Image (cartoon, rainbow, N blue to C red; front, side, top):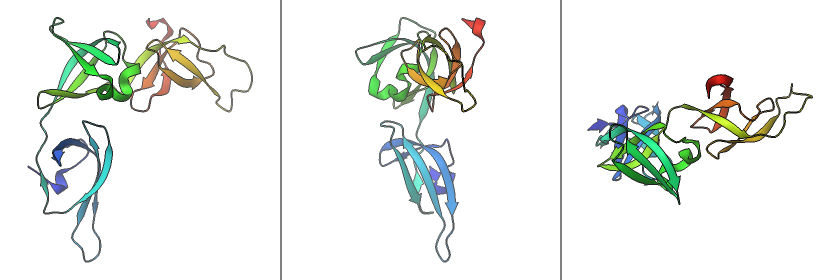
Length: 191
């Protein structure tokens, strides 16, 4: 059992029958009142983020979450297909609503972690940054780049993101998977 003051960021716990992960934890003490824990938490099944205050009398069951490395194979008709890393014959699918925002950032044969709760896959966890190749980009234009203009490009996975004006077709760029934003250009000769 977790006490209310143990809900630090990264703690997995059960709240109202659902698994949650703590994103932010603040300890509040108000005059002449008992201290409370203000917790920003994310539901691991539907992805909703909540903020709740918990009293010192509350305790929570710890959620048994397992991270299992899996290999992404392909997607078709709203289903994403994976296989186990040590046994490619064991294939399984995960629906698009469980994959969420990561669907258009996964490259064939890339490794991700399947998040498992009660023997059921409830999500995927990707690396913080991924490297993807730009397949379509408008031509770069010379001119005033001091203001840091941007343009939209299409990546090899189909994702469309904003990048600086100097990025060209064929470049390999790094993307932050949480924010889906360009972070930097990777080495050109890598692919």
